[in-house]
Image 1 (tube, rainbow, N blue to C red):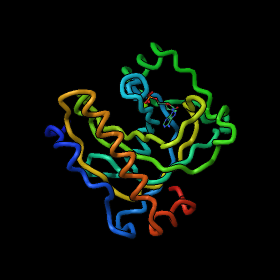
Image 2: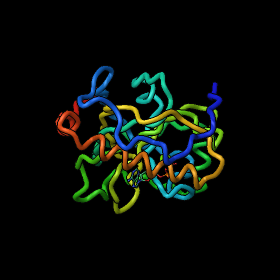
Image 3: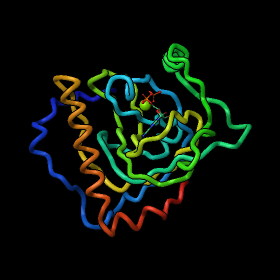
Length: 203
Ligand code: ADP
Ligand code: MG
């Protein structure tokens, strides 16, 4: 059931760094997924593209708390010719067709292939968009040359930033996303978090 998220508190009261100096249980949480199409709102409406992960990978994570997480992620070209299927809902299928999503399986990643960058991950129902189903979507804090639908994403979650809120306006949501990015960058820039950057071991 979708949560009844409360309206976000004032953005200026947010801490600039979160979590202990060294991540503790249940972190690090590492997993791999194919990048699947969502509803296309990240880039078009929020100026923040998010790589949506497969339902099965999301379920494996078994996260009971919705909200925004942070960690490291890398995207890899998918060279497995048998791995071309997307398991999408009818609505996702329709949205992808309308937007003319043509998966390139990460073959245009060039020098970004396999490079590890900081990330923020949203887990939940996106109350602002009134989604019915929980999803996991990752914004990698890096400017890629283009989309990479069908590629593999490997990521390690190292901590939790904030709960999921509803928003009075899209601008307020966009402002919180920018703050999440700054909080993630600052929180990851500590020895206890930097040491996990190259220790991504996926289930
Ligand atoms: P969708 O709803 O289909 O996920 P988005 O608007 O959220 O649409 O765009 C997501 C796509 O943008 C990702 O699947 C990925 O291919 C691409 N992309 C480009 N840059 C990034 C980035 N920095 N972080 C995440 N995805 C990115
Ligand atoms: Mg997305």
